[in-house]
Image (cartoon, rainbow, N blue to C red):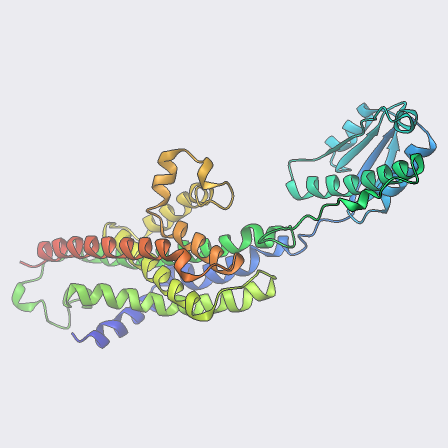
Length: 386
C-alpha cells in the first residue's frame, strides 16, 4: 500500500470508530468549553466579613468603615463573640472575621501598638487573599492617618511605599494560574486516549487471525496488517496530529482569547513547539495502544492516571517540592514538558531557546515510543503470518 492509501485508511478507521470519535472530538469539545465556565468570574470581590468589635470606640468604628469601603469586602454582620462568628463561618454564611480587641483605640494613640486579628477561609486561597488584601489596605490607611495626627510635621509615609506586581498572572485569578495548563492537559489526555483506543481495537480484532504469507497482501486482509509498519505508524501519527492541529487552533486561538488567558508566544515559536508536542502525544498513544488487546483499557488508564498526573505537572504544586521519584517520573510524560513549554511561551513570554530542553525531551520520547511501537507491531505481525 502507498503511504497516501494508508493515511486515508487511517482517517476512515478513526472516524468509523465511535469510541475514538467520542474521545477525540466530543471529549475535547466538552472539556474545553465546560471546564473553564465555573472560573470565568475569577476576580474575587465583595466577600462577606463578620465584625467582632470588643473596643466599641470611635477608632474601631472608623476601621470597620474603611474595611467595608474596600471592594474586596462586604460587611455581613457584627456579632459580640468569636464563638458566634465561628458558628457562622462553619455554616458558610460568611467568609472571614475581623476581630478588634478591647483597648484598641487607647493602645493605638499611645503608640504602644495594637494587634487586630483578621481571619479568612483559607480553604479557598482566592477568597482568603481577597479578605486579607481588603483588611490590609484599610489598616494601612488608618495607620497613616494616626501617624499624621500624632506628628503633622513628620515625613509622609508615602515616601516609602510598596507596589505589588503580579508576575505572569495579572488578574490574580484561576484563569492564568491553572486553566492554561489544564487545557493543554485535556488535549494531552484525549489525544493519547484516542490513538491508544484505535490500536487496542485493531489488536483485538486481529488477535486470533492467521494469514498465510502468500495471501497477506490480499485486500480482504485488514489494511493495518498488509502495509509497511513504519508507514502505518507515521500515517497514524499524521492522521491524529492533523485533527489535533485543528483543536490547538480552537483552544489557543478561540478559547484562550474567550477566557482571557494571556498569549505572548510568536506564531513560529508556538507552532514549532506545538507540533512536536502533538506528534509526541500521538506517538505515546500509539505505543500504548499496540501493547493492549482491549479498546476499553486505554480509557480506563487515561481516566485513572489523570488526577495523579495533574499533581505532578508542576502547576498545582511546585515540581521542586515533589519527592524525587515523582519528579523523575514526570520527565517521561509529554504533558509535563508541554505544559512547562506552553506556559513559558504564552504566560511568561520566553523565547524558543528557553524551552529547547522541553522540545528535545518531547523529541526523545517520540523516538523511543516509535521504536517501541515498531518492534511490538513487528512481533505481532510475525505471529499472525503463517
